[in-house]
Image 1 (spheres, helix red, strand yellow):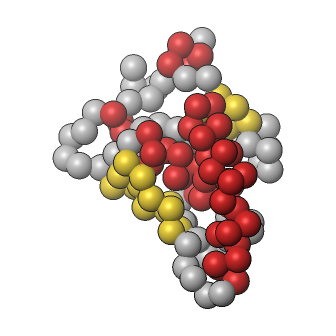
Image 2 (cartoon, rainbow, N blue to C red):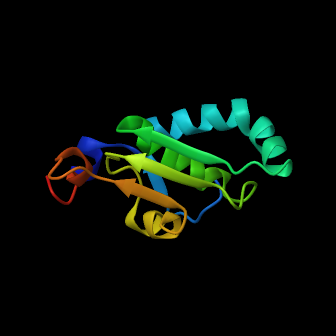
Length: 117
């Protein structure tokens, strides 16, 4: 009940029913993926290393996008700054090897979640 007060979750299409992400950031990541996946995949084939990055809501979107694109861009990474809680713990653990989050000092937004509110 508390979870639905603060964010509505949407399931990832390629993970199990237990893996979900914030619906707004998920929609943004999907739009970016739909618009740019072909170009990113072509660049990766040419030897470019793909890195996603963002701050705050953009960081959540970058983390989700990196997770969505991992199958087609296996060597991609994401560097996210002040990332809000945007995915389930289970999915965050899966993303940990390729998503790095940086939090400044005692910034409250990245630490806010349904468990801490």
